[in-house]
Image (cartoon, rainbow, N blue to C red; front, side, top):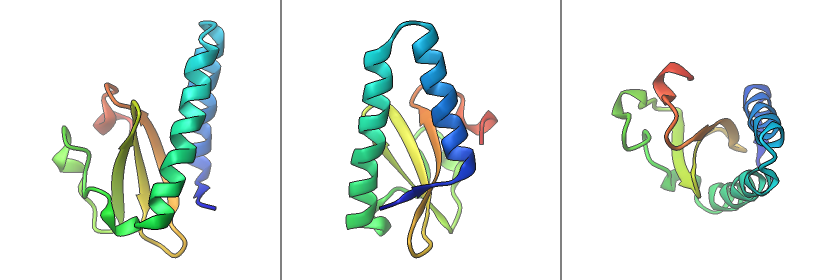
Length: 98
């Protein structure tokens, strides 16, 4: 299974707390589903991710890839095994959150 870094876990926890505070439990479930789907995709073909999220080409790094799953950009390392390093809502200002 593809692990989440401590930072990614903290991001997910904050997003879930935000959704719960707004009584948007379905959004929390969808977030967890997106992460599960991303894990499968990353495990199958880690090199298939994008070099940067499409709206933010300045985030390109040689050791990182990005995929979009549902409404979330998910960054991960190209280590063996890969590690999810960030989970961002698609419309978030990602460069100021990385």
